[in-house]
Image (cartoon, rainbow, N blue to C red):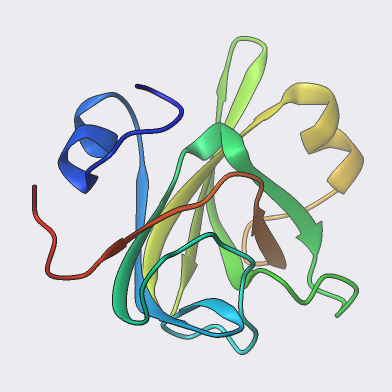
Length: 131
């Protein structure tokens, strides 16, 4: 149920989740403010809500090497034991990523730096679906 919720309500109920507004077309999910589609399985087209858990977001320097993500800026960094929670802000609002400390150190990012957030596991639901 956690990995494959059937509704957006269940997805949000079962843990931390980033919600992205956008649309689904033949090329995938296009988030508001994203220039490129993100690969996603959806059996519909039109307005959509996509969900991704903080630990299912990979971060890459925004150098254009990863086009299948959302370009955002590092807004805040909170170290929580062995993990790091990163608040990211873009035109679509604020999202959070959770990385282990080694992955965070390897990125060598500072507050204000741009990154591309690439979802590893994205679930998409029709926008009108509230249940």
